[in-house]
Amino acid sequence: MMNGFVILLILAGMFLFFYWYSYRTVALENKKREAIWKRKHEMEEAFNKRMKERAELRRQKFEKFMNRSREIQQELMRLQNSKRIQPN
Image 1 (cartoon, one colour):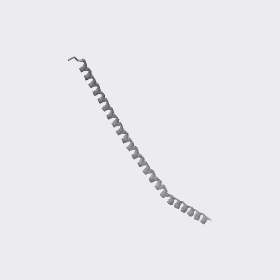
Image 2: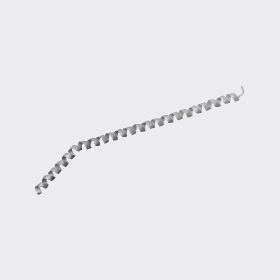
Image 3: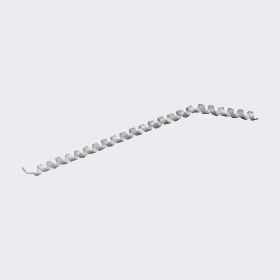
Image 4: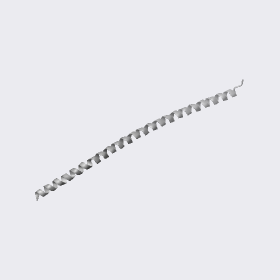
């Protein structure tokens, strides 16, 4: 009777070992796939962040350019008005 339990335990241990051995590769592949996906996702986030920063810099430069353009236009208008007012 005791020998039967030992044999059953050995068979169950072998079954568990083969089960673990066969699905270990699947688990490792899933883990590798997750790591690759995570790295890709991090790279995409970094790229998007850089693009947003560049877009913000472009927007700021354009805003400065437009402000300077308005100032020049106002100065030209002021000069034209001052020339019209002054008598020769």
